[in-house]
Length: 322
Image 1 (cartoon, one colour):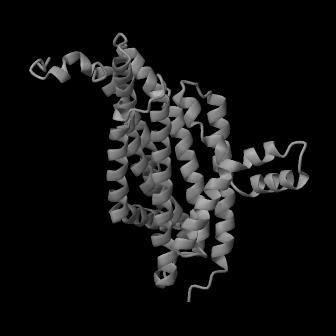
Image 2 (cartoon, one colour):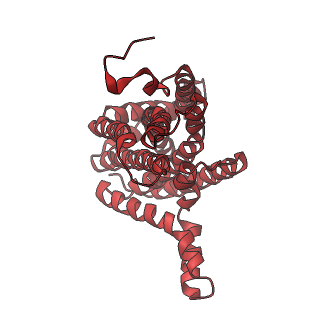
Image 3 (cartoon, rainbow, N blue to C red):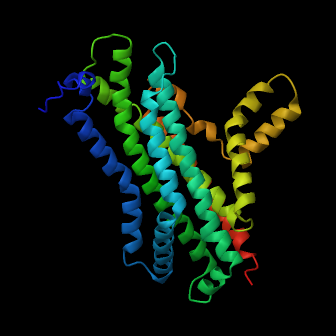
């Protein structure tokens, strides 16, 4: 073991979170997080019929273009710096710092992922339509459906790699914050198992965050078929805010104004109910998310994303590209 005794502030026991268990868990999480883009890439590389071959080529090129954009590196650096800074911020919450840090970390990863998806949809779809690049692609044996589905899958692949990196950096900070808070309160050093448990309880929150990113990616792809980047970003921001406020609107209208209840139910049928995926506060407080809830959220995410993509195909079929 390395000797840190010559640094009074870096005694070895300050690195109790820096143990093989946390490394193993972080490594396993990284493999799991990278499984989605790898599986998408593997599936698209299989010898499918001609229709899937076109989708595969478009998805691969789109994913590479997403990761080559300067915004990808800028958001990545900003996210990593913010995540590494959160454990050292004094929140003054009387022992609830871990809860606030987890909530902030999950929110930052989610918002940056959505911002990257909106920007990528603007460059990969809106700008190509305006610059007539999409028309050049369609002059080849590629249909509009292949083009749009390939763009969506490519954006998802690029965003999922971005999400995997940020969430993997976030994992050790959850373990480190447990030790840091115990020392601030002059408590006994927590066991390594407590650090790993803190990381384990964060995984469902990350899964729900990625589902929310997927739904918003489908929405921004649909909007990008008709709108340029700035209106797309504005509408996505509005949808994101309303998606979290819809349940509050419906609950606040019980026994009061029927028109408010009607509008809330109408919006919940059209817009994504994102509050189902925003459990950052509960997860930060140590609450466990059941597998049944995760499966229900996954089913809602897939069904809504497919419905939005179907609507996007309808919008794109009628779009004049000339």
